[in-house]
Image 1: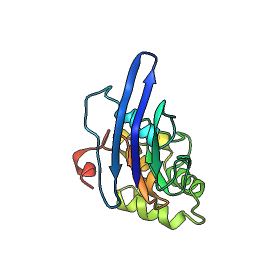
Image 2: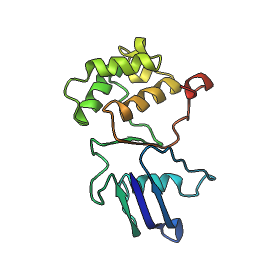
Image 3: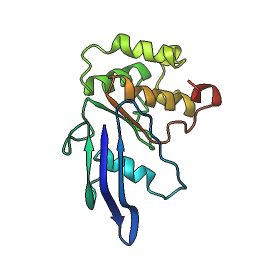
Image 4: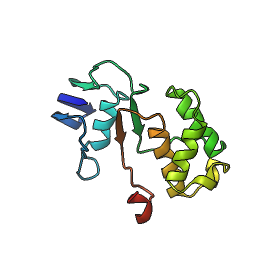
Length: 165
């Protein structure tokens, strides 16, 4: 699924990622643990190709060139990217269509119900609590049924009940 080989990323004199290598095989859940500023988010951005490495290579789903907008990849960034004036159901259908889902309406409704947001579909994003917005953002990362899902700080803003889902 992911092959990282001798990955390095530097910002000025700060080396955020230093000669990192690892492999993630299909069917595995893999996580990064470390203090703030240790390069976890930078590594995820390198894997999704939002950033380019200074050195090393990243292979995702068999490709070293495919961009993060691939329909085969779901990405939940640390910073959330929901359009605040759009309605929840509308924005999730929009994101699903961007990822190649032709008729996303029923799939979006299923995900909203699954994450206790069935009544939130008609609300504007700006009316959501932080935890509700986090669940909506998660749905946007998985609604297209990707082969690989990359989550950066997925539990941020979730209460213990929803974090366990």
